Amino acid sequence: MLTKIKSGLVVSCQALEDEPLYGADIMKRMADAAKRGGAVAIRANGVADIRAIKEYVNLPIIGIIKKEYEDSDVYITPTLQEVNQLVALDIDLIAVDATDRIRPGGLDLETFMYEIKSRYPNQKWMADCATLEECIRAEQLGFHCVATTLHGYTGQTAGQKLYHHDFQFLRDVAAHVKVPVVAEGNIMTPEMAAHVLTYGAHAVVVGGAITRPQQITARFVQEMQSVQQG
Image (cartoon, rainbow, N blue to C red; front, side):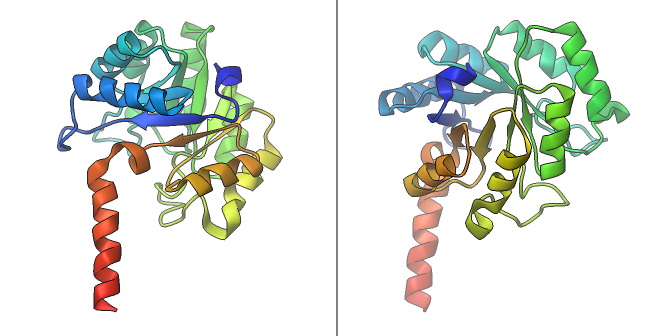
């Protein structure tokens, strides 16, 4: 799969329960629209959405399951239960939170990774990271690629964005790991997506800027209001 997505756009087709586009039937059509626009793969959340997209659209899939647990801040494919569900779907790549945060049940990433790799030695894994150190450690633990997905979304990186200071975080990651680096997180324009490829990204994942119309609408409204107020 990593060869297939090189230099391409992966579209994240996700909607949570409180969002207007929530539902597997809508998400499979969103994935179809992304494919028609030139996407090389889809990132999707949850068993129902992934199954529907897989049956409807012939593209590689990066799968996750978002689930919250009371004893951990990790919510992207946090436990073996979610991994088992994703492996059963026979998808190309499974993404998991690869931050240094403790997982549900008190597991650290090393223990978790050893368990899932032992159970599923042929599965490919993506590491959703927030810091350079986490990306380096993920490579050492055997992840097949690392992603900047959680940069800005953990306590250590809160408020930071991938494109701050000319994409320096992405450039640092690309300079320190040998596995493919997938750029993901707050990539809001086609120009930004093109730039990250020149800074070492193997592929680019874009979600909300394409597939969440309420967020897109809100950005238009906020910009218009700021001009009027200014």
